[in-house]
Length: 144
Image (tube, rainbow, N blue to C red; front, side, top):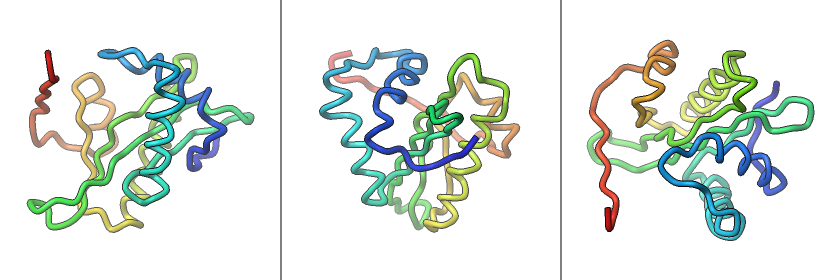
């Protein structure tokens, strides 16, 4: 397995993985292709995010997306790991851990002061990787 930056050619694989990851909203293929995926690629290209793919045998088997946010409280940028997913059949083989380690290395190179993960479902996974719980994550949805 290798970890590398996601490229435009990875769109179909990322969409396939996203369909298995998203629980609150289903991705819309047209919007994904024309709006969401290009916006995430652009954020990564501008250094405002990390968008990494785990690849094996020429196919993307997992990805991580983390957004970089300037903060006042932390006195620097915080990298928020928003999406991490691995194909169902490949879970438990270290792919997700490898992606998280690559995100942490990218945060170190960029000088981010911390990496945080808003999750409840995967808290034990992140604890095994050295993350500690510091806050509750609350969400508001317009019109919801």
